[in-house]
Image (cartoon, rainbow, N blue to C red):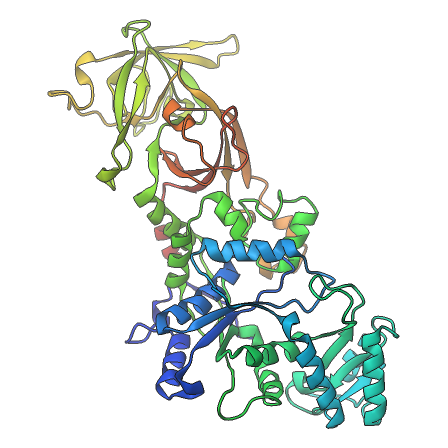
Length: 570
């Protein structure tokens, strides 16, 4: 495997026609009339976990190429290991694919659909002397494989008679032998330079009932044997996968040619995986995080799963944009998470409604504003899209503002509120600080100020300029809310390369919860799970599934500041 390189954008992966190398290979095959000019791709997830953003890169290619060239794409679950599979994962995978805007139509398949044909093919290969039953342990088989520079050793069972192999294989499937006691191996070449050709295992014994086929089978095919044959049975023309399958390709072709001929043969093409900074993509490590309670489930917004990204407020279009930016190449790359955040920020900037939320509130009292008076201010929903209109927001004598927006002894370039300094309250008036109230410990409990009645935003002559603008929420109408500020789960750029315990790298500041934020009433009346908003001056947030009318909950999606430019300078 090539060394992982840092990369920024995938433009270098496009040729003059705007196609990446995989699409160009497909275009060449179609132009040459291969497989009758037909295109059929497939996405073959294992139903033993949840999809993450790396899987999204794969099925964006699978479904996207089919759309681009007028072909079809199958969804086929690789359900060959009933010990780890569950219908929960099947449903979640379907949901994730639909969420990103793709549909397989009537082309839903399972590897288990082909168990009879695969079994018959295995029997045929035994009869032709191309497969044998091996009774060695997995450790013995692994030891006899040899090394890349040393040939393997033949199994003592390699030349057992065909009739004996057939009898044993049939009895394996009847459940007469224990798991791990026997396997069926292909008889290829124990001296091959390609380690995968050194008599690979085709079938192993598993006695766990299958969630689709029940107790029908006691032997289950291995990936290398099942995958290419399933492609063939479905009419798949292009099997697009990631680079770790490059050394598997000759074996894929070896098995496929047991069925295929010149009129039709699936072709495997490999591209680079999606590796993301400050993230782990290993399914094993992600499962460990969940099982040990280091995150709050598979949909924790810090997880790279599509369920987690969706709960964090990432949008399908932003994920597609990110994948398009990083591109598809033949070398592994480590992609900056800042670019993903940039894609999300760009999308939400165009679509998210602006609202007023005060996360760390302190009371502001306008001394010269009439008690009991309420004015209605008009707030623009999205300056990027005037068609989105506006909404109303109550203004009163007492307001909540951010505690960080006030300093008693500010530095020179502090443009927010401080004693005797003026700022504008967004969409409302210019105010001037006159003093503060403190408790016995010296903590500020309230800020006092006066307002300029002639400075209301939008009125003629009220355009007097001040350097600072603050967001605010009216005290009498504010609604309490919980804000969950999420940051990167890991504190180092490439936790996947760490040789020690990756759990030691978890960022202790990856989740901060603010339980007493104040939100404007207009927002409180429109709580719908998954809706995105821009909190003025704070960032982009999404309504969490835990949210209720009595207890609104929001997750931070991404900040307003674009850190991608900073990453480009590294």
